[in-house]
Length: 252
Length: 257
Image (cartoon, rainbow over all chains, first blue to last red; front, side):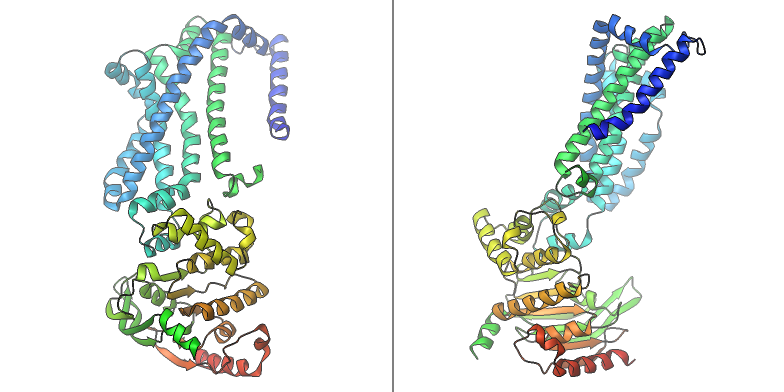
């Protein structure tokens, strides 16, 4: 555990100390980039407000992420069931991915109003595509010999999906979820910029008040949230793939 | 004689009549292919890469239909789904399942209950020398052990027809020798019909009772020979002059164009 944590911790400590020194020495202006100590003070001074905001953003990101996981997998299963369905609908999934969330966020407010629904919708929209793409990829790359084997013993399409195609796709699905988890946090923050509340709103308000330290404090918390979600997926991945997949072999 | 009676009851006889297979509407892989295989026969199919050996096996397994001709099996009521087993070139195990659950897969797919499934699977794992490894996962096994699991998975349904597509090609020689001896023993005990595709002449000669050599084009049979070798095949037979003679015959058939 320490072996894994130490390498990324070293640059963090070095950069933090260097930044602190540069701000104190006047090389970097404190109103542009706050000293790490100032960010830490902002975290402490506004802890109640930030904790409440963090809880809201977490809820929005998590619910959005859960929705995109569930519907992304269901959509991928449907797309993989027939080449015709795939050809007809997959281009729209790609198109959906290219729509800039920041441009349609105001629309979401019109549709869902100010508040949580908009935040969830925003997190959902930006995080669903990697789930669909990776799950579909995984479902379509089942070992043909194993498909033959299942056919030989008369397995139905449903049995083949549950016992072969889905478990075989799990590594790719988890890769999709890793990408989606980070995007869900970004989506939630974007939704909050427009729809109010949460860390996104804290950033927006602090920015207009020139409170760069508070902006940084909120951004820091948003990153922690993203990391926590990413860590959660890694944990699930380690537990489910521990026995069999090369990417998790070293961890045992 | 009692041996051959048991064989006739267990194995399946096959007849391929005018079988034709075309890929992408142009490449004729196999054309007008005729072959009779006796019940309980151990047939080796030799031939250069791309001569249609694997295609032939897939058609017999009914994984891909012939474009013309027919494949008849005897007894008539032969249900390919439950009585045919297929062993591929690589083990192709499910990495998320233990050895026991991998080998039990066919029984599970056929709807056998858990207790029956495990009892039958354990008996077969014992026969292939994996009794102590049932809780292990494929990532923890050597190539030879994985192939043993694959073999156990094929045998667990007590198939009457065993189709093997270069199953030992990727293994080191010592492991291959052991598995060949084991396979031959299991064939003798079970009396199933085996069709064994390989491009190793020595493997074909050591294992089979009958060998056919296919030409590079259209699956034309260049040589069809009952091997003049004893029923008992131990590793000592490998240096016997009789097997050398059979190998020479097979080799010259493979070389002529």
